[in-house]
Image 1 (tube, helix red, strand yellow):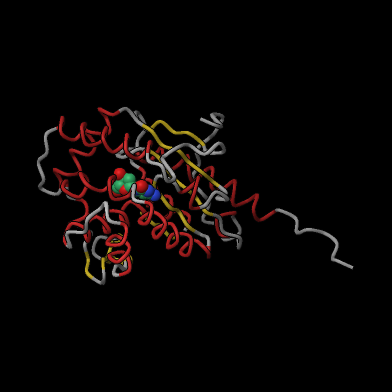
Image 2: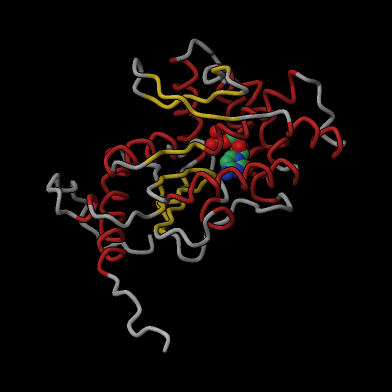
Length: 259
Ligand code: DC
């Protein structure tokens, strides 16, 4: 870890505490598939009172659209035409208390988590036109700051100026077992070996693609989540974020005005 001398703490509910201060930051969480990024990011956002954006869901929604419309992935004109017809939004489901993904107004949250989408999403997200369109939307969303965003290129490409960057990794066997459990909870039974293969393929495509490959930003904190609980991950990131928010709010404005 970049800073291993940390004491995870629960943020104060005191309105004068750093997380309630006026200047908001961006928390960028990148890493490999299945490290617990989304679950962690969601909880961190909720504790900070920030917006959570799952950028993987955006690439999954594009993949769903491309598959449903038989878009030829090697035809940039067709890809661009399809992208012009895609509108991705997020809606809050009060029942699950989760933000869910909508594609052209239709809730696709369940569909985009299925294995057939996972098998195609890295290929789709490596297409330069797709990346440009998604990055543009993500930067637009982040203009107001006060955001926790997770993905593969958030700290390197989408918000290279993010105040807090996290890079997550974990043992592949552990990642696969976690993913298998997640799928099982949604009544999808998938062989562990198939999940390992899918994770390895996605890691390879995500880290070797030409446009903004998955890589750790120099100023990111590394977290290996193999033997950490979700609560430990959340506590650590909230601890780091609280310190960053405090320092963002104590920075002195530039002195002296132009004559
Ligand atoms: O986080 P996830 O597993 O839902 O992401 C699905 C895929 O989307 C992942 O294999 C790579 C791609 N992705 C990306 O290229 N850039 C992002 N910022 C987020 C996801």
